[in-house]
Picture: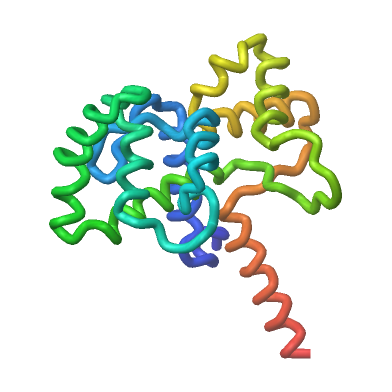
Length: 201
């Protein structure tokens, strides 16, 4: 009997991981039914500076927060064009909110963010003074490796940059240990088996 047979949901979770990684290679995705660009370091930095609750944990996002997130990622986005923003929000976001889709939109964006950071190395246990942003470290490693300008790399999907970073780690250290979200299911299965074995003794 394989692990897929023994662990409920393992196959589905591994398929989700692969689908998420495939989507990261696309420039355009469908988010809340709207064609959008992927989250980049540039847009993440903008959202962080605005204090968006999608990237700065501080409560439940409002309908306006949803509109801002989607506007920054939509294909029609124009920097500083307030009239274009208002027209776009009126046409694309307000009808969904009026149709009672606000909760669904928040969940869609949160899932997109979760997928984006699926392959992130995480923050680790860093204490004391920080001397640079995590995004600067990511840009530094990617640009140094591939010879790209930071301006170019800042516009690429973050989820794609994390995959490049993982590929670099494995290339330089084939024995490096990396993890997948599905590993938690395997770990729990092992813990359950060990607990059952201990209970029998």
